[in-house]
Image (cartoon, rainbow, N blue to C red; front, side):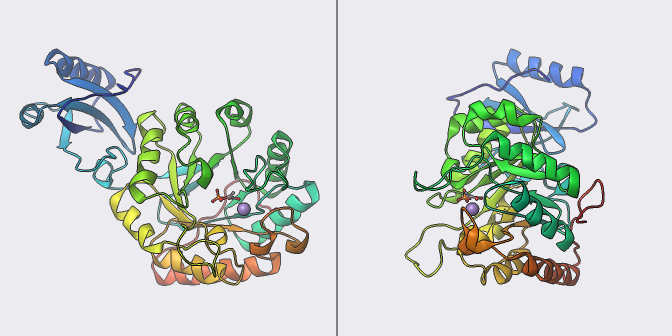
Length: 360
Ligand code: PEP
Ligand code: MN
């Protein structure tokens, strides 16, 4: 609506006015003007299915906000630091569209692919296995944030172009990681979705830049981040105008050393209840163990996740990154089959990719 968000308000109270979906744009503009005339600060955010006016006011002013105003459906007074991510802002849940595959609708979405794009043959072999298995979305890192500077750093933009080439062949949309704002523009026209890695969860300049474009953002939880910090990072995207946000739990750091991280599944159920954003699980980074990936993927589905993201490599022993946790091509089909069976038992199904039939 061109009524840019106010960056900061020191007001003592905040109300979210949920706009009636039937309200017209002039009606919403008029409402914002009326509120501003009443010395209330108002901004408009598009979140989920409704348009939200955020009004900073004193507690007394909030009470009078709805009175006789047909444009306002209801008023919420958020009790958490995150406001727009709250479930009550969009009770039906936000659905994120990744290249035609909806995440957050009932179907469970399997995202799979190699940790890193290494070359055309490796990516194509992984993508074919993933497509044949019945996964809906391909993953693969081109800009790789690596713990050691001595490790493979990724193919950069060439890797993104290979992902697009393989999308043509398999019909799989893809997501890939972006590590700094300067990469967004060159990636925007190619990718179906951006991944923000665990290490960048609180890279606020990156989040602000991703908020300013309309492609989906898969926001991984930092291994040392509380849920509040994670949701406040999501809030950066929502406040900036991008509601296409998927939360991804990928394990947190605990005293455990037998798994790479500790998969925090209770937080998956919590985040589903607490927010309107889709939540997926990455059992590969969470466990660092391909033998634990299938049971944790199934557990994610049982916990109410909207999907999983699994690392698959055609030749794990030769992988340039995260090979030790990669699922083999021969194991991804059976895993997707088990997920389909469990999903059916839970009254759900698996999402399928759109576009051309692939896997050949
Ligand atoms: C990845 O997905 O390959 C990755 C680097 O994940 P994370 O940011 O969760 O460590
Ligand atoms: Mn990885």
